Image (cartoon, rainbow, N blue to C red; front, side):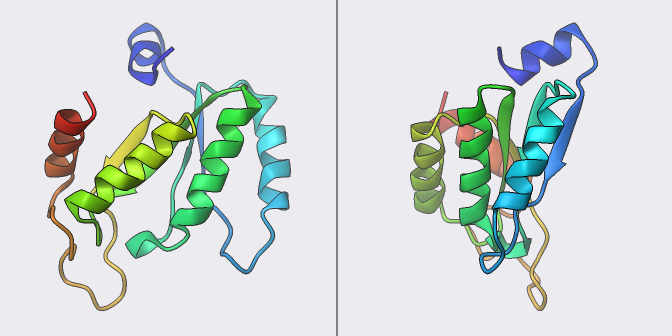
Length: 135
């Protein structure tokens, strides 16, 4: 079932997790996920750091949630630093691992940034692009 369908039927219960930095072990978060599954969340979303830092770890976590079969993984995805070409490639990567739910955001600017430095300035533009390219 898709998250929007669940939301039409009831109030959702979910968790949001943040992946560890690349120099930190991922196992503690995987153990935490196992504990979170016991609460039967409708979905678990995974964010990443400003400017896409930890985006690779985000993919790992979303894949682990998907492979658990216990809930729906939702990836956060931002405009920050992302070109249309990058977005298409990365979203195809998520689909390839079975992650088909996205929380599209503008995202936080990394320190010193004043703009997204990508092809979209606002989340609504990203959402429209995703709708057109991934109907």
